[in-house]
Length: 356
Image 1 (cartoon, helix red, strand yellow):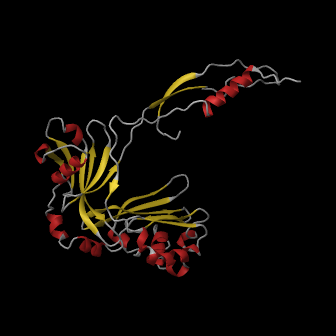
Image 2 (cartoon, rainbow, N blue to C red):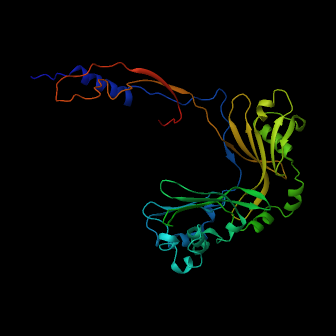
């Protein structure tokens, strides 16, 4: 019976492949010494349950754009993602497909935001509003990508000078003016939503029952740290509804290093929002940063979101050249020679991606 003879370089290559793809597992994730606190959000997830009125507009839009995908925000029911993997939402210069010529002609051709304005007007039933909401919002970012001319605009929704929590509307338009995608977490009617959440919100805005310091104390307690308002010093309070905070002294200084507190409107549904404090705190001892929402009237912690996770360095023993038996540069003429097998090297890198 014939036997199969394998060369040493071939066996080395097989061994290298087994090591790289299955002979062992290297983890770049390190669990913190103290378990992280779980996320929670006590707001009513009424978005998905309240999409009956939007179902028909979505179906109409799907008839005009192939492969259309629409994803709704779980709280407000706003169209968090409107996009297609097959074609753009509009034709060039913000006209065609989902934007009719009649609607597009209502906006100047040289308007850099023509496509998104026309899209909002044409599909106001889906969003609950038209392009007029952009006039009341703050344009946070407006830039073009250098290599392909993609134009990205980001608006932040504000009401009475106070930002709406996660209230962003983002449009992406190609260099030819084709609307590529839209993302919205806007509340359709800010006036009605504020009055629905709390009729006396104007008085609360001027003199909140829970101050910025009080909100930080409530947030610290939620993280398991007892803190008194006397421990807190306002480092900066500009504008009035925003504050940088640090500890007066003592062991709590680590907790308050870089702490931020900002008043915001927190949507509870598509038609309701309340005033709250958005607090950023770093947990003492473990180093995780949390974002907490504290109701400005009741002091209740509405939500807690972990903003960081722990990674360790990862060490690998690998071939750092092209193969276990590299030959670079290659020979100038055909040859049967084989380069000598090299040893693997031990390298340590930051585990920037646990998937990798």
